[in-house]
Image (cartoon, rainbow, N blue to C red; front, side, top):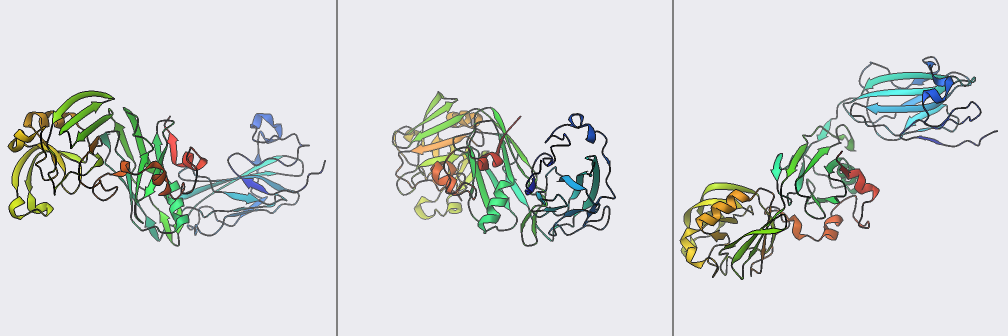
Length: 415
């Protein structure tokens, strides 16, 4: 039976064998096809436009494999780099030529495995290995935060060594930033600017789980002479779900752990003119002692202060803390008298300090102050609507919400 020609594309497994009369099966094992149990050496049947073990080659030039023996055709071409990534390519309708359809990675080692079939239906095999030249200009990714234990609100950050403005290049970069998280967790990257991205799930991370981020961009061509390079991965242990809510109008702080209220604390927040910011904040760090001075945040004159502060939990880079404020203890639970921080008794502050973790959620409601900035003053990521957050993704912008194939390429469940 004569089959019409078609274009063969190398995807995951071996190419389908066109001739069904020889009894070959697609993607089958060698035991299924006796003719391919012991493939012969096809060195005399195929030719490459690369030299094995020779000088490193330009990754931007296509790889080609051709047949040089009559009545022989290519059945399978697999090209894999150092990191296990396969190079996409196409096989001609006649099976006499294969060429790559994507740029090769820079500065890596490639192994090419070629399958052939002669006029008798016998299978041959030929391999070739070569290196590509290093990139002239590299794009490195620095992930944050440092590895360790964090709360459920901690976003991942990715800082690029070079700006990326082009939409297609952004999509390529984003696809290479891989977040591993528990199955069923939906999340997305959001471009803050040309060099910075943040990643958060739709909802807070599941409590007591593990999440990690890594780059799969090493050697990958991003733009003209710009290739990705190796980046250090980051793994986070997510602890209990801790959510703190400070009501600036009632002057009380509620501390919840895994959905259960475990403490309610009288506090004071920012007075008029210095009102505490509304919204969700993420704990940035803790300091047992901080010397707080008004001039470091632009406060002087009659409002200037210079105070030793203990049990300080930071929630913004501009200097907003939850801390001990024994000098205003008479106002705790009654009125707002601070310069923007949330103050409480020394005993309550010590308890709070011991029970709060970097990455935990601290939310302020009913303040007359401004809203927390989304970026630039800590992690205000959770104040952005999820639909708007997705619009900041180069892959998900304009797509419907859900676990699309693009989501799957970026968010992969742990084993």
